[in-house]
Amino acid sequence: MAENKEKSSPEPIKRGRGRPRKDSEFQTLSKDQIAQKALEIAGAEGYDALTMHRLATEFNVTPRALYNYVADRQEVINLAVSRFISINPLIEFDCNDWKRGVTEAYNATRKAYRAYPRASQMALDEKLKVEPGPFRNELMERILAFYVDIGLTLKQAVALVRALERDVLGFVMHVDYYYDRRSKDSPDYVSSLVPLQLLDAYPEVPTPLARQSLELPQQDSDDLFEEVIELRLLAIAQMLELNRTAENPEQ
Image (cartoon, rainbow, N blue to C red; front, side, top):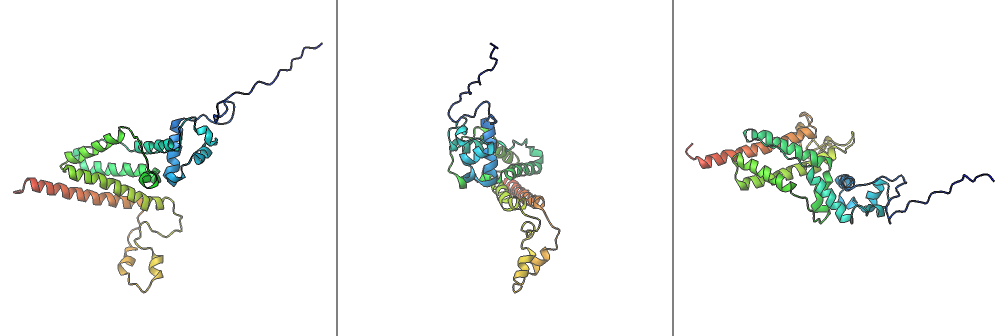
């Protein structure tokens, strides 16, 4: 008889419950990948959109497969928040050029918030218990020390740190968020205080200054953000001058 060379099919690879097959098309995941994708979802749509089902769809796996890497949705949210906090840069401040330091802090914070605008609204979307690690402590201490070293009081420094977050977050959500997503034919709500369409809609209301303002050079969101920084620099300069006057009243 001829030798039977036909071989039996190999046994399927055993896997744990919910774990993707090693011989399947599913990619191997990691917490870093999950954190990044979670941040992208939360940053674009808010934390309410960050569900296990949505996250699994992004990776082309089942929701059950994610539990091999994270305990639950709360851990996913914590990973996204921690990653968002970590992208804020540690700036090397120079007290001899404080205006440049403030400008860099504003621009760097805007860059991080603009990339993931909705991620900064964690307090509105979720009640979170996040352990961000020591990074935020270092970040806060560094900028507080910078403001104090240039001649501001600690109270003023704290107020300016809060102002930076409000200035940037407000700008990103009310200007950048709209500007980055508007269509070309949308009314110009960015640089115009009142678009011409609205002025024309109510001719009974006298608006000579508003109409005259439309003749000013058009500004994009970068131009408008420079105005925010300029106003904040003027406020800091005034604080420093008042502090110097208080210390040397006879000068």
